[in-house]
Image (cartoon, rainbow, N blue to C red; front, top):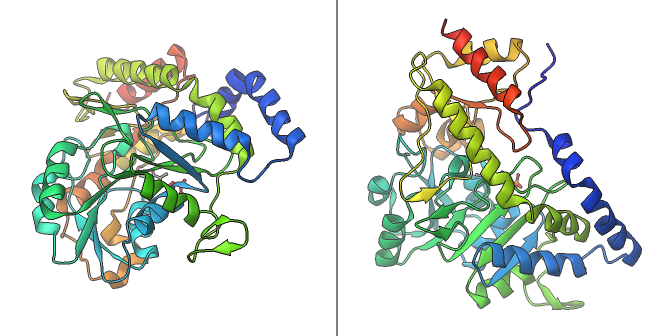
Length: 369
Ligand SMILES: *Cc1c(COP(=O)(O)O)cnc(C)c1O
C-alpha cells in the first residue's frame, strides 16, 4: 500500500516556504557566487546567533561537520573518542575517518542518550574527546559529561545533527561543548534541499581551522597551509536554509504539540513505552520514538495502513557489519541492543494535520485491540 502519512513530508514544507525562498534562490543564481558566497556568510552569522555561538561554519554534510570538528581538535591516529553505541553510524564513522578509534558507551534507557554513569568505563589512556549525541532531538545529560571531560582534559564535541533549537538547562544545543556538528540533511528539523552541515563553536581558533580545512586548507587563494578537504556548504543551500531558519522555532513548537498529542492519546495503550520530556531540557522532537516488545508486528501493521513508521536504528554501532573487525561482540552494550529491537518512530513533522495525528493514533490503538 502507498504510504499516505509519511514519516516526514518535505513537499508540505516547500508549500509553506517556497514563495519566500524562490526569490532568494534567484538572487544567488543572478549573482553566481555559488561557492563561499554572500548568502553563505549571511546564513553562518544567523545560525551562529541562533545557536548562541560566536561562530558557525557551513560544510558539506553532518558527517563532514563531525570529521572537520575532530580534525580541528587535532584528533587523529592513536587517539580514542567516546561515542554512544546507539546512534546513526555517522557519529562513529567520523572518528574512524580521521584515523582515531571509537570507544563505545552504552545508553541510558530512559533518554536513549549516552549514559554519563558509564563514561569512566569507556575511557582509556588515549581518550581525547567524547561525542554526546542529542538523539531524537532530546539533549544529552551534558553537565556530568562536561564535568568529567573537564577533569580528564577531554574535548566535548556535540553531535547536534538532530537537535537544532533544542535546549539544555536553558542553553542551546550546539553551544554546550567546545565544538558542535549539525546536519542539514533534508529530513532534519532544519534541512537543506540536498546535503549540508555546520560546525558551531565559541573558540575563534577552532572556527578558523574548520573554515580552512573545508576549503582545501586554504585562506589565501592557491596557498595551502595544510591538507584540507573540499567541504563547503553551497551558497544556494545556505540561501534556502536562511529562509527556513526563520521558521524553525515555530516548526519545533508544532513538533512539540504533536508529541504532546501522541503522548496524551497513547498513554496506557498496550505495552507501549512513551518518550518522556526531561525536566531540565527542551527536546525538539526530531523523532517521536516509542518502544514495544512487538515492534516488528506494529511496524507491519502501520505500513499496511499507509503510515510511514521507521526504525531509528535497527542495529547498534558495535553490531554493524562495517565494524565487524573492530573487536566488539554481541551482548557488550545490552541497553543499546534491547532498544534497537524495540524502538519504532511514528510520523512527526510540523505540517502534520490533526486528522493525520488521529489516524496514526487509531492505527496504533487498533493494533493493540
Ligand atoms: C544525520 C546525522 C548525522 C549525519 O549527517 P549527514 O548530513 O547525513 O552527513 C550525524 N549524526 C546524527 C546523529 C545524525 O542523525
